[in-house]
Amino acid sequence: MPVDILIVDDSAAIRKILQRVLRQAELNVGEVIEAGDGVEALAALKNRKVGLILSDINMPNMDGLQLLTQIRGSQEHKDVPVLMITTEGSQNRVLEAVSLGASGYVRKPFTADQIKEKLTGIL
Image (tube, rainbow, N blue to C red; front, side, top):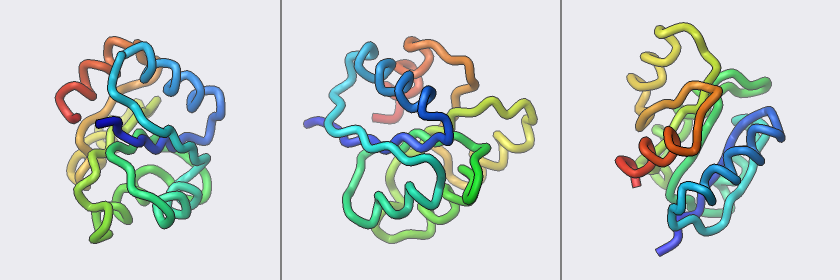
């Protein structure tokens, strides 16, 4: 069954690249929803269920860690896998994401194979 995916990144280019990578990875992807930050992501989640969230950490308005906290605190979405995609050089921020419930992370720049490998274990 296809999995609907929410991509959250303040860069439209990165969102498009991730969509292309998901297609290249030959995963069973349904609808792909995009959000530019955590606020937009939460608004999108009010109207639909997704099976996976790919989120940047560093974003304006609401960053990926704040978004992750909101998702894990939500009855409806608390079990949705969240893969963090980040340029974050600080290991502390990445470890914080994992401690908050991230299912894993990939550092930018990434390859299609890296995304596929991470998602194969999650989906």
